[in-house]
Length: 220
Length: 317
Image (cartoon, rainbow over all chains, first blue to last red; front, side, top):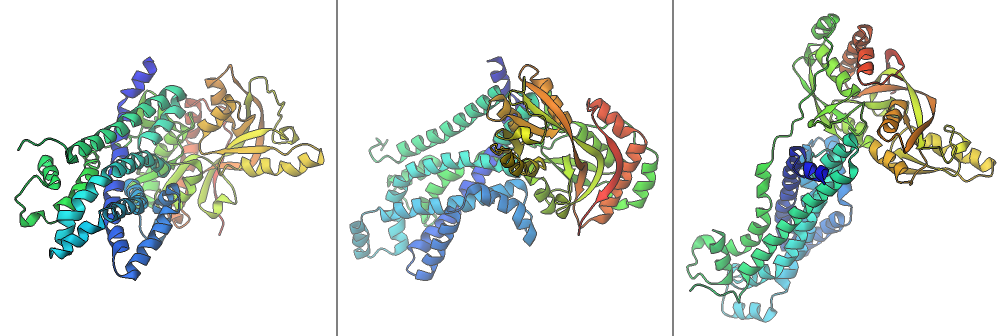
């Protein structure tokens, strides 16, 4: 117990959280941008754009993240693109998250009642206005739980960056266990730290759901 | 600000300025982006090198004059820091790596005028990290073989002695990399030279009518030791000093069955396309060995089973 508390408060492990969050942040931020592009390509009227997006999805959703990370870190330098460990991990996670986030966005947009879109068009709304006033407000509300899932999974997946020398929580835990032989306490402690982090993501999700709840009483 | 954005999406607010066109869509992003903000809290994690104890020999001055390009440089050393005695975190201060290889690298650096930072990778990734340019040198108790010399040049300095780690009492009566391993399970790291040696026993085992040995592959030394402790593996063959350290850590549960010689040398790996750097490291290592510093470091880390040999280069085209 004493050992567990020691490792829970060890600056070396706590600093690893910073790297875990950095990789997760890069992955989700980049994944969201990529996802927006992919989703708009898939929903586009031009078949070529949709086909390219589909091909990207097949490749990056169909290969393991750990492989993509090693590729970004060890293979890209052979074609002249040498990224830092964090950048390589962030790039791989973003490239991997993008198709999943694109699907969330696409499902959200397609989930809006078709009749409302036709009604909006009948009222003369431009596509942009239609998106802003009718589709997005409903779609985003529906997407929140899926985004929560995706954020938790990205946070856990960031632990794979340990194989490409990112000094995040998992790599720090394994190294520390190797030098101290305290396997049980160290992995228990880092498991607890991950739980706190994923719980925080769940809390953000709940707050977002409450704030977006239509039945929430307003002050007006 | 978030309150306003959320109200906006719920359709509560009525003033819809020009700037609000994509605000709704941006909101979903804002939620996801909020998770990225802690990235700003990222703390510097540069590992502070520990200093080698002996002073550099006088001949190092001449080497620094001969190889001026290295002076003042900061190079990256790729290591698999799971081997206490050679390279592992300092349990007292985990922001530092310590061990014989760390001290040896720092001593070479001090001699040639460069400093080292460290990159922790899996054992199998040591040479790929080097050849992709993500590291400049590998000093991580790696054995120089012809096969590996296709990926990197080596400067060798010590003969290889392996220990055979087994559970206390040696229940499977393993006596080395021979037919006593038939039917047993060996834990090894991916990429270890011992892996093909154990695999090659299959034919001999078959001749004796026994099952062939199976191998569990891990990516660091600690996992191999844990595999024996957990009863998943019967043996782990690796550098004799590493095996001794494991026995020292778990004297009630582990023992060294025997020691075996392998026809390899321990070496420092450098990129193939930097012959000048390779020659500089070779020259520095020769000076360090001549001045007795390498022996001193072996003693410091209680690696008394070290069998130093004159440094030389292993390279293939």
